[in-house]
Length: 222
Image (cartoon, rainbow, N blue to C red; front, top):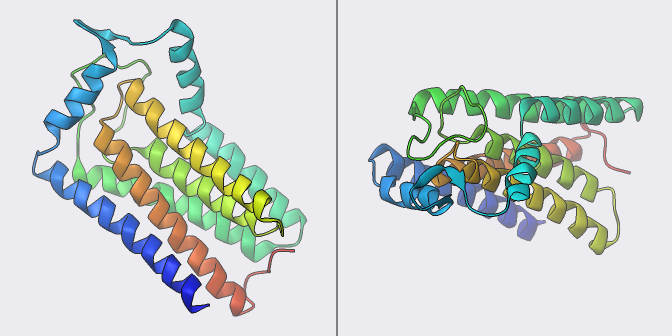
């Protein structure tokens, strides 16, 4: 139990430290060269509106980036909450709902606080209308998929299945964040900070779930 608690605390501390470190560099303007270099590297030389790679890659990443959008994440949240309610796990349903909605609110607050504009060194390949830091897609996909992946993993006894659910959640989160940089709508540091903030929030919510479960206030997994 002590070892598990230590791992949880290391995860929380690591995510928080990563976000604060990136945020500090962004506030001081020390990341512009790094961000711009990567964005330009993902475009054909001299053509900032033309991404590298075959035509199908852009189409695929447009589809992937939608998995971190409000519409898809809302559908997943509704489906997950409905599933938990139908199984009589009302407290767990409330916890999942609170984790995602709370993460969304936190993302919006951070965007307003840092007030970073979208990249202008390359063309945007999808429409965007909000501020840039941290990436909402990266943060909310981490919150949603990591939380649900961890909850699903807790229902399995076999290590391979637990690793599958966690691995799938991590891969989806990484792909969604990377797609935002490729499409030119986020700086790389926006995405890195979004991953750190989202993972930290997911860790915190799951740690709270374990604490409430030990108190008998959240139904244990089957």
